[in-house]
Amino acid sequence: MNIVFDTNILIDIQKKNTNILNKLKGLAAKYPSNPHITFVNYYEFLFGINKKTSRKKESLEFIRTFPVLNTTKRTAEILAKLKNKYNKKGFELPLADFLIASLVIENNMILLTSDKDFEHFKELNKIVL
Image 1 (spheres, rainbow, N blue to C red):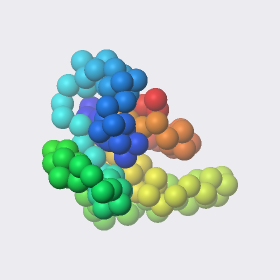
Image 2: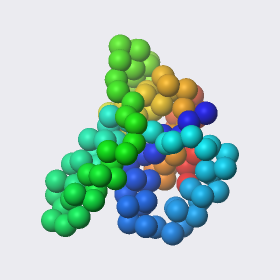
Image 3: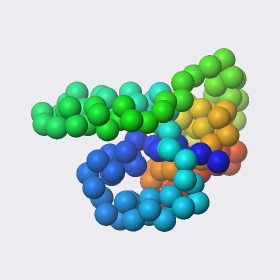
Image 4: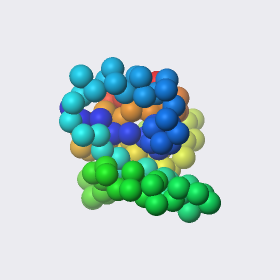
């Protein structure tokens, strides 16, 4: 199964967060294929880059190395079901989180994140650091 990096993981990698980098080294043996990102993560990272004053070129080169999962009609179907299910349970999570979860589910991958909100999604394969 392939790993999908959440935006917080991308930021930690770029900041050279040794704790996250060490955990990634440990996961690399179990998940050797190249990690992916979702369209949403790509957008969020680009949004952050546009606010930066330094290292923009380096940041762009970094984010462009990842394959991107894009939305489809199937993504919308999964998204609608997830949002209805979890809103009924009282979990008002950001639409971006629902989109990320839907893309990861659709592509049968594993989300790597440090965002505890993703723990709510029972049908999502995830590793929450």
